[in-house]
Each structure stands twice: as C-alpha cells, then as structure tokens.
Length: 554
Ligand SMILES: Cc1ncc(C[n+]2csc(CCOP(=O)(O)OP(=O)(O)O)c2C)c(N)n1
Ligand SMILES: [Mg+2]
Image 1 (cartoon, helix red, strand yellow):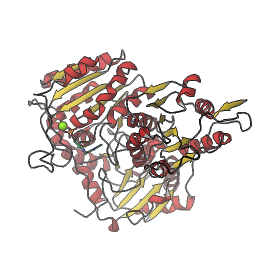
Image 2 (cartoon, protein in one colour):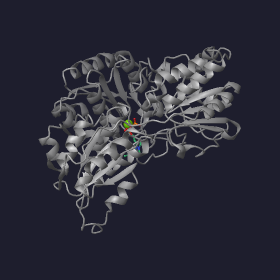
Image 3 (cartoon, rainbow, N blue to C red):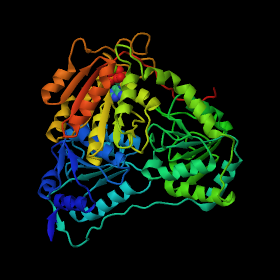
C-alpha cells in the first residue's frame, strides 16, 4: 500500500511501542501522528518538547524511548530553540529521538543557519531522509542507535513528509537493540588487580542504570566487599541505605577517592566535568575502566586496564570470576562497612543538624529532610535544578531505587527539572513526582506550567525561595563569585504562590518550619487527582553542600 512518509513514520513509532510524542508546533509529521492516533504532548516551547522526551528516555533507562518533534527545514525557528534541549541531551548521553523537517532538495545553503552541521554537533547520528523509500531503513538505523551502545540523541530530518512509498516493499520490524559482553581475558585481568588491591573503590556511572544493572552492582560490591560512590547522573544506581554506599559528594566521598589505590569505574566516562569528581593523584592509582564506549578509555586518566562491554554483562562476568577464584567466598577485607558508616556519619553530621532546624527563614535542608519524611522513597520521584538545589540534594537526599531521584547535567541547563518531573509522571503515573527549584529554574518553567493543567499532570514544584541566584560556589551574593548579578525580586516583593495560583495550581507559601510537612502532604494529595501544585518555601540563603573532588592530590 502506498503511504506518505509522515504516515509511515507514525506507524513505525507505534510498532516501536512509542505511546506519545512531545512537540512544539509545527512539524510536518504532526498531522500524521494525529491521524494515526499517536497522542501528542504539546509543550509551550521547543526546548521543553525535547527535554520532556529526553527525560522520559532517562527515567525509563532507555527501555521506553522518548520521541519529540519540532520545526526545522528552511524556517528552522523551532530547531534553533530546540538546540538547547538537544545539546543537553547530547551532553548527558540521553537516547531521545528528535524528528524535524529537513531542508528540501534545492533549498540548501540559502539560510545563515546551517541545519545539518548544527544538528551533527549535538547528536549521535543525524539522519536525512532523502528518499521516501528509505523511511523504514532510516527508522531502523535510528532505533538501532537508540537501543545499542552508548546512549545519545538521534535526529531524523524529513525534507518531504508528503512524498509516498510502498509500505509493503520493506516491511518494518521493531528493533531489539544489542549488547556486547567483555573479553573474558580482560575480565580475568581486572579481577587479578581488584583482588590484589588494598583499598579498592567502585565508581559507578549512569551506564549501570541504562544497563538495568543495579542489582548486579550490588551483588558485586557485596561479594568483593568494596565501598561504592556514584556519579550525579547515576544517583540511585546503588541503594543509598546500603552499608557499602559512601555517597555522591561530600567529605566522605573525598576521603575514599583520596584513600583508594584502585578505582573500578563502571558505566562512567570518568570525564572530570563541572559537576563530577576528578580522580585525585590518578597516576598513582590503578584505574580499571569498564565502559561500553572505547572513546572514554585513556581519555583523561591513564587507564590501567579496560573492560569493554555492557555494564550488566560486565558486572556479571566480574562477579562470576571473583566467585570462581574464591569458591564463592568473595573478598574479605576488614570491616569495610563499619568504616563507611563512620565516614558517612561524620561527614553528614552538619547536614543532619540543619535538616531538623527550626530557624526562620527556613533552612533549605529542613525542606529536604521533611520531603524525605513525607515521600515514600521507594515509590516517588524527585529531581533538582541547576544551582544550590542540585548541590544540596545530591549531598543529602537518600535515594533507594534507581530513578527515585534524577541527577542530571554534566552541564546543567536551568529549567530541566520541570521536564523531568513531567516525564516521571508519564513514566510512572502512580508515583509522586517533585521538582525542586530556585528562582532561575522557575523563571524558565513559567510558560510551560499551563501544560500541567491542560494535561492533568499532578506534580509538585517545590520552590526554595531565597530571593536571589545562589548558583554554585559560595553563592552569587555577598562575598560570592557574582555579587552584581544575584538579586531578583524575592518573596517580599512578589508572591509567586498567587501568580501560579491564578493559573489554577494548588499553591501555598510557607514560612513556618512546622508547616513544611503538612503543606507537602496537601500538595501530594491534590496531585493524586491530577492537579499540579506549587509550594513556595521562604528560605534563607545557605550555600553549603558537599564539594566535588579535584584532580590533584589533597
Ligand atoms: C540555561 C542556563 N543559564 C545559566 C546557568 C547558570 N546558572 C546556574 S545556577 C544559576 C542561578 C540559580 O539561582 P536560583 O534558581 O535562584 O537557585 P539557587 O541556587 O538560589 O537555589 C545560574 C544563572 C545555567 N545553569 N543554565
Ligand atoms: Mg535562589
């Protein structure tokens, strides 16, 4: 049967199990999506169209692919705005499918902004559908890349969505996605070094979550009796109430990174970014790098040994090898768990104290402590914003299940938390979904709040209202790093609960510490009937949190 490209793409998306597509109009595939019965989640700008689909892929660990459409072609206004979302997805390695209009044959090179070269810098693959018959081929390639290897965004540009082809000539079959297992000799060499180390440390990255390998990570850590740290993006890959869990950041993490003589990195690129640790004194440590992508091996640090393959298959192979060598007994090495407990206890003491503080304005840690109290940590979702909320929450928020918390942002683009909370609600409708933001993140979100009302997405936006941009470091204010650009109209001048309440949200403004828990409970309660909530907590400026470790020795 002869169909047009847009219809073919819509049908293939349905075959691939895609339940909805986020969009900001226009895109020439959208009408076919509508006709074929693929629901569209219409966001209020193109960046959020990408970000919601991106976050959906992250939260489902790529088991359900987020798909978005936005305007491209010769009038690439949408794409120019979507670029921010694409760049973030690429930076963080998220397997999102972006469909846009392509520049038609005969129109290339006429505009200043070159679509193809721009998109190639922010994608794992940029496909240009230059012939209608290639629709199944390019969709197959797209889903192969989305489901195999190192995750990353894929873009498909459609220059002529109304061109037709014979749907039966090359029938589409859904793509499974494929994994690679490590070389057994590399596994043996890694275990030789691991069992010979005095102070090994496991450094777990988001690849563990994408591989669905959290249980395998736990099993290996227990077998070899080795402490675990996770990256910001991998927060939750290892249960944070586990006796071997050190942390994501903070003094205890610094202590273990410094003390280790061997680092078993798994599912992390080990790139020392702005929001990750360096490996101090790396040349004096043995770095075993288990990764799906050879591009990261020997990238920043001398890799003593690499194990290339899928994180789950690698962890299982390592575990089997250790078990075989030790007759199932594993590695015994003193009372590692007691040391971890003591290090955590000492490093977290200052935060635990403020998590129960009665001070006014409210200490932000009190909000986080109360949030942990109110939420069922095994059945909820929390994410941070760029700024203090990221740094503070990733220091103290106990994450018990993978994606119970989404840490994001090798480069953190303000506003992403709203997209993440929406995606979490779409992925797990029964879970409470909370975005914790400051003023700047809220500013980015405002235009998109209408979506929550229209789509009946019961999520809660928690605003740590501190009247200024704290950002990072000691804060923008006072002796901070950007004292001339920190102040915005704060709670004394603007009542955001009234502004957002007028839209139709359940809103509250809380300045009494004792009111935090009841207010959160009311918000989560209205969320269950599909009504979004916004709670403004009048907080003090408190830019204190765990630090990232640098690359030089202490
Ligand atoms: C798109 C984008 N532009 C600029 C920044 C730089 N930046 C990081 S945090 C921040 C201010 C955050 O202030 P606020 O939202 O009030 O959070 P607080 O740290 O006060 O909790 C800025 C401007 C960014 N992360 N993203
Ligand atoms: Mg602020």
